[in-house]
Image (tube, rainbow, N blue to C red; front, top):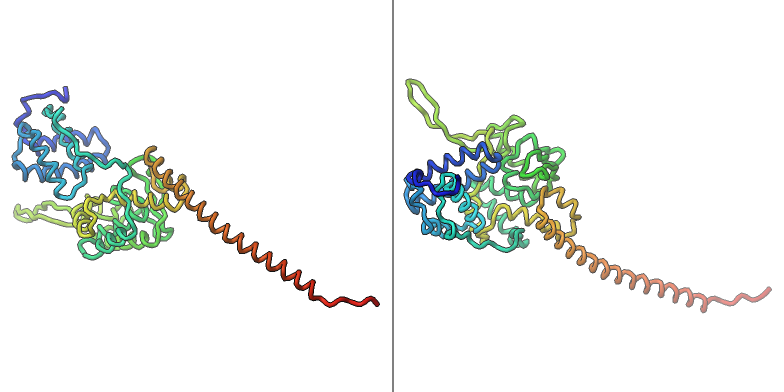
Length: 351
């Protein structure tokens, strides 16, 4: 039974155990979920190899190692939620091989109470954008930042965007595949978002993307080709039929430089939703454009919208009061003017 301790698996290498788990998930879980777990697994493999050893065995994963991992990831500028999701993946790998023995010892890191994430001040937005476009190697991260911040798209939606989903003439993106059924939607592009998409399309075409099913941000892949006389050649190139795995390294560096360490890419989605809620965008419009929002998130943004509505109502009342005062004074002046004209008009003598 999964979850019970099985000593026969304790000498299995973590890297091999993790690969076997991911292979199983390819059958048992959705493709998007598997992709996310693969990304988290890269961080786990890298850092565990540094803290312990490349040949780390399952029997050597104890609570001390797990806590060291948590501390090191936080020191790298990663948020507690991300560290906890990686911890959950480690737990799942160990449970899959009946090696999880840390119940009662493992504790996730405390996460911020607010589920909504972080929203940015206008000054923080400007600094983030200016820093992102300051280096050519951050080209993709910069335009992806603009796209997420201007449309509320999820990072995974941007990464998996195909050319056929982009309509530059109509200034729209048509999402047909998303995290949830509610994520299928048409997204209008603001001028900044439209320019970002145009630049990414130009880049994709230069990298060989020419078919509708090709990806807007192609992946950089490596492989081995067989040459003549049995020789092999290692090839590194962009592959337009494979979507990028992300721009995590560039994002971490540019957010640190912008003084926004710990800012998540997903926070840009929350920033977009919050900005719309604050200006009073109707809840139905907001949810249609953002895709799926949990009830808790919807209630939170509804509260922001209600605050914006009250503020707008108060502002309208203030403006109307001023307008009415001006109109009343004008009518009074007109009335006095008519009275004055009546007093100064010459009397007509009877004929």
